[in-house]
Image (cartoon, rainbow, N blue to C red; front, side, top):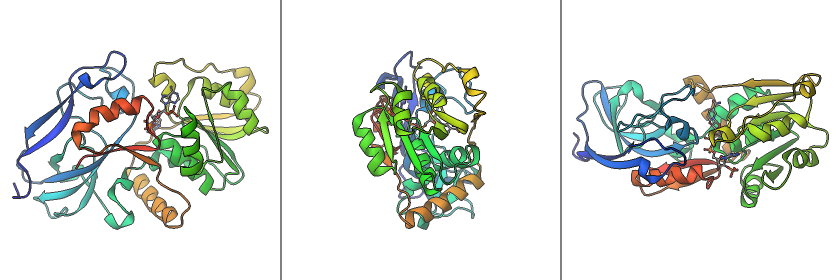
Length: 337
Ligand SMILES: NC(=O)c1ccc[n+]([C@@H]2O[C@H](COP(=O)([O-])OP(=O)(O)OC[C@H]3O[C@@H](n4cnc5c(N)ncnc54)[C@H](OP(=O)(O)O)[C@@H]3O)[C@@H](O)[C@H]2O)c1
């Protein structure tokens, strides 16, 4: 091991499946000996990891999400960015910035193929590479086909995905972008930090009525992160021919009811509903990072985010509990070192 790399590394493991709410008892923080890198391997010091509600689904032993779930007592995974501190391969050298999925730990040891080099100069700091932009772009542009003049509704707008979905819609010429969120302070956040024209608190009354007040002629695009009664309301307020990109079902992820579809009401308006699953291909990620960097330099978008944990991996369990309680806005990030 290189002299400046410690022989030990802290990491978080899931020790029990949550029955209802996720609690600190579901996790443990352990310190393990850091393995010597074998042939073809590198050692990476992790800087930042992104957090998402999808972790709740990954903490169930059986789910139908298209990504691996967490195993009890095993290393966990999550989207992370770090710097190579030791390498046995010419393709990655000490000091390279790399994105990977060996998160929840201070140091990662793995084969070079698990780590993708990122152009450090593209952004002001490494956590920009962890934005939810590839998902937001896939939904807003590739799935809903947002275009000039659209009136757009994003449910779950303060999520990491939702904030950038709103920015993308504005940058592509949408006439109006409306978001729903769970509290008055988050309404301010959406208007001031995430480029939204209008926002409402979905607890404050009938979602359909609040949406109709803001978009009397109907919405033409919906980017839905929530499902449930918010999707029902968006369908009621949709203009003929409106396009729906179905991204997530936060309400079901939190145990609420599935939406009831009024088929007789929506068929004559020829609405399109399309789900999408971002598999984050290298091309999708590179295209987004280049676009994001350009828009940032032109001051057309920002990177709405919250630092959910600052004190290294030991702060991750509390950060996940807080995330699931809806305490953050924008992409939730944990500083690992
Ligand atoms: N299709 C894909 O390829 C893809 C890829 C990535 C993520 N996703 C999905 O996209 C959605 C957003 O992901 P994310 O990681 O950006 O989210 P996130 O940042 O983890 O979102 C957290 C926020 O969700 C909101 N929320 C929680 N429970 C809710 C409920 N019952 N109803 C409405 N809002 C609720 C809360 O905001 P409020 O206080 O405003 O309620 C909370 O702050 C998730 O459903 C995720 O699974 C899909």
